[in-house]
Image (cartoon, rainbow, N blue to C red; front, side, top):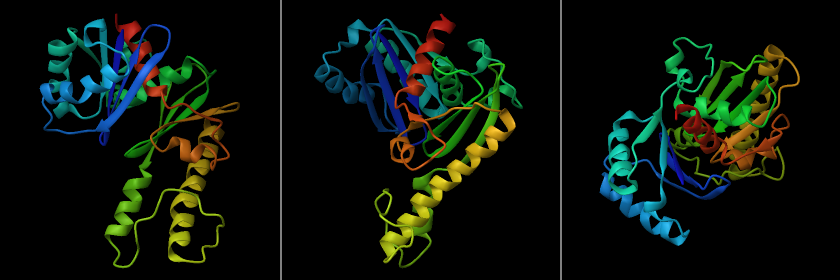
Length: 254
């Protein structure tokens, strides 16, 4: 079994693949202080509940944008899964041309997103990943990773707004029934959620104008499901896209 580990700034997404399908995936908070033993203590009951044994692991691939935690995940893989973790660091490891300056500045998650999307869609294409930051990962017609855009994540934006104002409350991340809010909660949801959706659509249209049509847009990440129905330019949502890209990367790094 393959363990794919996507380490983000806010959350870690762990998936287990049996060669045919994803058996399970789990999300938990990224903790800089968590040791390899604590990682095992967190994941063991989840794996056990899913009928997955640590001893069945035969491969581990990691994509991380949080270097300080990498060493403990490497130790966890060795000590508890019995495998050497392979870390995705750049497109050159997996045969993906990267048109970016410098190429290794592209995060492992963004490389994985491109690989996952290329496995199912014809380029040009764009992946919108809703995480701590919302990233737009673009692949041109030749199949090369050609850059993209980075904007503050929705929760970062909302937390900043609420934290810097005296009377604005935290609100649920959901679309209001109307654009013209009739109270503070509706007004915030209109501006934050609907406004964010319009910003996403606007950037996709600009990207599409540069890359050329057709240019399908697929969403992934924790909040992606919320926006796939709000953004007219996003065609689908795939919660395992980054993990799938890591799985593909593992095969290319073998």
